[in-house]
Length: 362
Image (tube, rainbow, N blue to C red; front, side, top):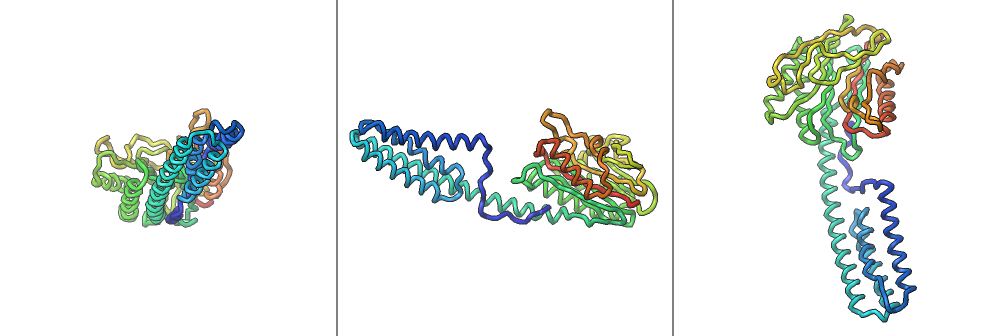
């Protein structure tokens, strides 16, 4: 999922279609003013409107020379209209020229400042994405005899740093997996994800009981401090033999189980709080056994999937939609889910989304 550091040359964000219409209308208005000025005779002038030209040029510019050259063109037009309107006091033309220069210098400085800040943000984002990519290493297609696939989709293409996390490891206790969602975004969320994943990779190999793994993750978050930090998560153990898997749900959306051709939500038998809040909410994490035999598939997902809305405000129903999907390969299934999700929302997500599918071979 990591794409490496972003290039230093920043690019302007795409404008919506209505904004392009406003820009086109502004240029057309200035052209109309110039035409009226020439046609109205030497006693009147509309040269002050030319100060808007460098402003319009600076809207999408990421190079200082763009508003500078546009300002130069505007100054040339001021002199041209001054010669054509020799009945207008010279002070009016001088004022128009000074206005064009002042606006040109202001917009040029603004473009330089915005571009510098965007480049700095791109460098910071690139470092964070590289760190997140190192943390969220895509698992191999097969782990401990299970077919595995994962997908991570950011809500915004220009802000690919999120708090969703996943891991799949092979241990002496079977394949263990984690899918979680950190409260918050950006660098702080990446740092929290790093701590959670580091503890999980150690605890998953050391703790025989899955609820003990969850307890260690909870304790690690508590020791971080901050008071408001938590992670919703689902933990999974799939033993090498047998027809059951063990889940621990820590305040996370329920996974989906495709068992004997039927898709159902694995609802927790008892509520357990997110990681980091166990001491505040009380109780303890309880492992839950679920059927997981040959050909069965478990699909874990974050709330970026279950809380995605269509244009009528309806939430995406994962169990209902996946029930109609016949793909057996985890990679093919996740591709189908993402296509269906984008069709449901009309192309955009309100939150980052992560999906993890694990299938036991037939």
